[in-house]
Amino acid sequence: MILTYYKETRVSIPKAQLPELYRRLYLCRQFENVTIKLFTNNELPGFLHSQLGQEAIPVAISACLAEGDFMQPTHRGHADMLSKGMDPRKMMAELYAKKTGYNQGKGGSMHMASIKEGILGATGIVGSGPVISIGVALALKMDKKPNVIVSFFGDGATNEGSVHEAINMAALWNLPIVFVIQNNQFAESTPRKDHQKVDDISIRAEGYGIDGYTCDGNDLFAVYEVASKAIKKARTGKGPSLINAVTYRILGHYVGDPGNLYRDKEEVENAKKKDPLQMFKRKLTEMKALDAAEFKRIESEVDALLEEAVTFARESPEPQDEELMAYIYS
Image (cartoon, rainbow, N blue to C red; front, top):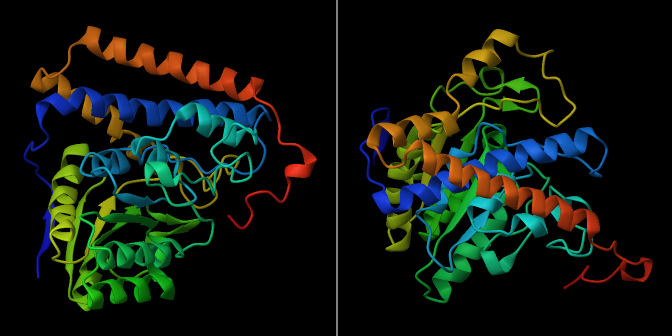
């Protein structure tokens, strides 16, 4: 049994990968900023749950994955999908409910999927993702494939019976899966201290007989170090792990929820001081991995890509009425 809290991290990411990781992190952040503005302006239908402030977790973990690996995002999962390689243009079209979207406009923000990129359909049912994920993990094991699946869920979901059952089954069958808690401190409007007794959720791993890790979810290097260990373990047939990546949900439960009835402004402002994007940028500057001109070039390219994505989505056709039932059971 290994229960480790990663506070101080060693830089273990190959330096050549760092510019691409910054690009992904900045893309995830700006995609959220752009879609929040579009939603606020009534351009996007449905609901939007922002992953603002949690982006370092999926970006770091995706950097540890290989071709053929899978990921199960949550309803708050735009960064999960982008970090795994989904096309922001097709994602934007899906948010606009357009035919050119990943799921012909039927999935929207909470149910988007792309098996080609290894993204299982996001689900709006809290705690259901791990159950779906262990089915994929079992298939990978039965087919003797060298791949893994990462299953994301929040701190609130750790209290669901389905999550406990899924982790227990994965442990019993030694499945190639890594369970990752994007611990953003809230289950909708309920602070974590009011919905669970334990301070460190990773200690629950001991009850399943698997390894548990807790890391700073805003520190991309810390998440990468923990994830690389857990994913290697799963890939080599040594079974599942549970990662508790501690972060903070900057906005309310959904875009439109002011979030000021269950937390104070000072708490949010303190959390913003640990912005994962700025933390990563400062670290890369200290390492001399990127200079100001390179940061600006990457950011300009991403901004242009997102402008293109919005234009593509706006100009895309809407699904026809006769297509309503298409793909429902396929």
